[in-house]
Image (cartoon, rainbow, N blue to C red; front, side, top):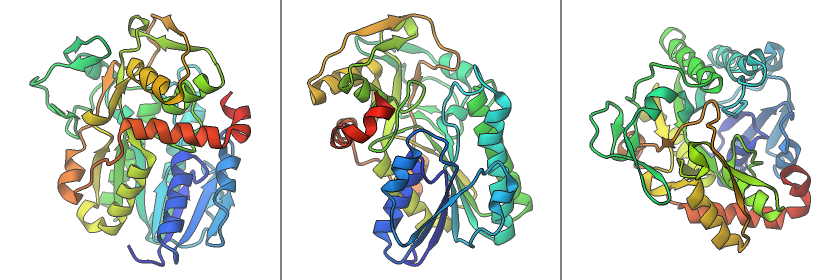
Length: 357
């Protein structure tokens, strides 16, 4: 990557956005980073404080308002990390607000990128894949987790997980649909407006500086609940905590995006599944055990048998496509993810208590 690159990060005070800003500031001493954010998300101002740097410019604005893009400085790459990331959004809250936050903001960014000839990197989600089809995959049950049965004749399902050729037909969630709608329009802008773009469908990303809640950021949420003695419960699927997700350390995601920007011509106009993969997957029960080992804190876990709207039994990412093109794969395991997040909470306990407690 050229040392004097200029990068605009929408949602730059969120977990992923601020982590990317910090990563680029320190790796590229001649870079210039701009972050766009409305500071509405809990913890945003804490993330902003850690980004104090002469080469970083904070621009406050509501990206659903097109005027927020007026007079923005010209950049080389626009990273869209701005979103309402909760899978429950729109189910018990306003769908119009979700569309504004997750779709309209992207359209405004695309218009600006076309106008200024800026490359566009979109952080999408694994939740674009249809819920019903995922839950129809045959599975077995071990003492600690649900597991997909291997060698099933399903397009897009490998022994490594879900790849990019998995069907997109079916309902997903309002959140997943808002992100998939953005993906569809990004492809159209690429075809008809000559936009250069990359789409990353990220699975669960975790690590320091994520302000976890029950509906997203489960690693932080699980740790914080143990540290601050909050009530925890396994929700759905008989309340045994056997549902499984793969987890990616935020540092691995930052390294990937750096690699993609540096090798743009190899990955331009493509969609990639990005995640921790089979080797970095945990059930909630397994996460609890890992949290117990690292914190030496044990909490009783309540059981709630009813499945929440939008939930799925298993999701594990097959990231083989990006590995084959760029050689990238995760380097940090689940124990490191949980331990790094634990140390961050402990080191910043006084500051985080009002948010995480």
